[in-house]
Image (cartoon, rainbow over all chains, first blue to last red; front, side, top):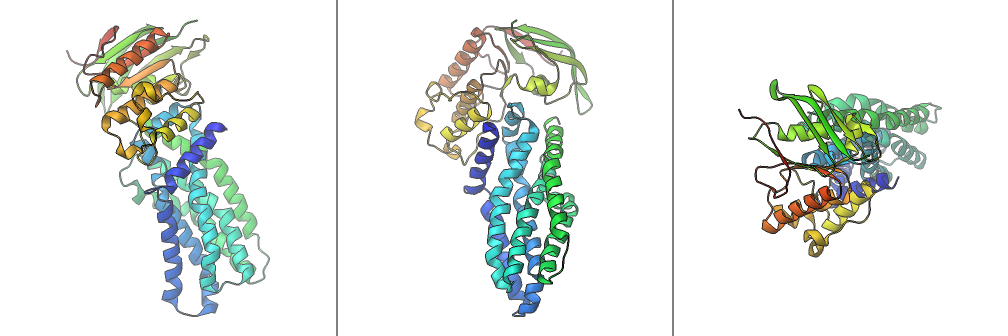
Length: 221
Length: 202
């Protein structure tokens, strides 16, 4: 447990210090989310309808920006070899890295989204639903992205291939994440939140195994 | 029970080329092997096979631990290995002290000693300001803190000054004297008594 915690803490420090990528992801998210209302114009009704979709898409793309280096940086400088030899299993290493990615991007993105929703005139219940859906759904983005990052870690410019591997798998999160917000806005009952939670849970539980298999494959090549 | 490494008829094939064939070697506690051979002879591949990263085309590697357990599976062997790769695994954004404290927590062993490796004045210095030799010293300090019994060293002398090279030799000698085994792939003599294994060539 101590080892797991120290790996998460180290990855968090690396993500937050200069050149870490967390700040880049957050800046990208804020830039896209503020530009869209400027491009669409002051149609508050329209903006409130598209808010969840735009913020979800921007959040996923922002998270992908920092995902490609999740394992690659440690692979290139030899740190991943030493992690593989440590008492921690590669599954635990993958889980720690996914957790650190979510803590340094998914969680702050969710908090910033609550502020950015104001620019879209999203009513209070819609903002609450948006924050809840991001909070539940972004762990799945980090987890599934972690599989893609593990598979592409030895490929130079793997970041270009990563979105093609990951985006089809993440699509359900975007569909049900923004769908859940729209259902709340329309006052409809929907199972979107439950599906999102189930999908996210499954992704977080299974991804470390798939990511560890990808890392193992690449370390042995 | 004492520590032992048993390499049995190992064959390594990389990119459809046979690097070495039916290599056998038995080492017991205190043994040091200097692994020599031209570039591309398979020195690093042999170290990676022993560490469990690579699967050999044929043959088997066994490690007998001091408790008597025989480790044949790659992932089990990994837990016995102390690794000094040709890359230093130094993070540019973290200070020397932060890096060593992280690795000591990850490996679950005691505090790292900075002083013997000339790192004490550098504890607060971020990795990006370290010279190549200082990074190598950091890697060496990390290797000793892992308290692993089987050391696999890939070009341990690279980038080190004369004092650094003496430091490597001292560390390896102390490790072997304490009942450990060390295998070093190297182009220049390490200055430690032991076997020499030549890979490749006629």
